[in-house]
Image (cartoon, rainbow, N blue to C red; front, side, top):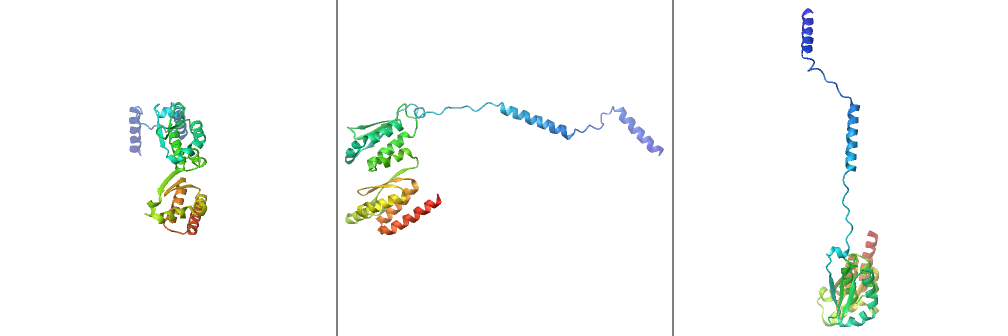
Length: 249
C-alpha cells in the first residue's frame, strides 16, 4: 500500500511540473456547434443574395437579327395564275404587309412575286411564312386556306406526281386521276374532310396542305386510289386511322 501511494504522488508531481500542458481539453457542447453552423449558413445565404444579377438583354428585332441586311424571296407565277392573282391581290397583299410587316410587289417583267424584309419587320421567320403563303396560292389553293400558313406554325405543303406512285400512261393515268377526284369531286372532298387537309389536283400533280400527320393520312389514301383500290375501301381505312388518331390525342 505504501508503494502504491508513492507512485501516485510521483505521477501527480510530474504533472504539476509540466505546467499541465498535457492535460485534458474541454469538450465543446453540441449546441454551440449547431449555432456556428447556422451562423455560417446565414452568411452563405447573404453572400448568394448579394451576388450580381444576370445581365438582361432586350429581344432583338428581325432587322437586328439579320444584321440590317435586306432579304428577298421570288415566287414565279405561271401564266394560268395571272388572272386569279390579279383578282385576289388585295387579299394576298394585306396580311403580308399589315401582319408580317413585309414589302411585296408583282414584277411584270420577270413575272415573279417579290417579297422582301424592311426595318419594320419584327419576326425573323416572316419571310418564309409569306413565301409559303404565296406559293400555296400559286399552286391553286384558296386564299383563305393558304392564309392558315401565316396564322399557324405546324402546317406544311407537299407535292407529288401520280406517276411517282405508279408509272401509268394514257387512259390508265386519266382513270387514276378520276378515281382520286371521284364523281363531282366527291372522293377528294371526303378525303379532305376526314383527314382535315386541303388537296389540289393539277393535271397529274397532287398538292396537299395540312399538318404532318394529316398529310401522311391523305397521301396514303391517294396512293391507294392510284394503285387501284376501290373508294369504299379507302374511305373505311382513312376513317379508322382518323378515329385512332383522334383517340390518341
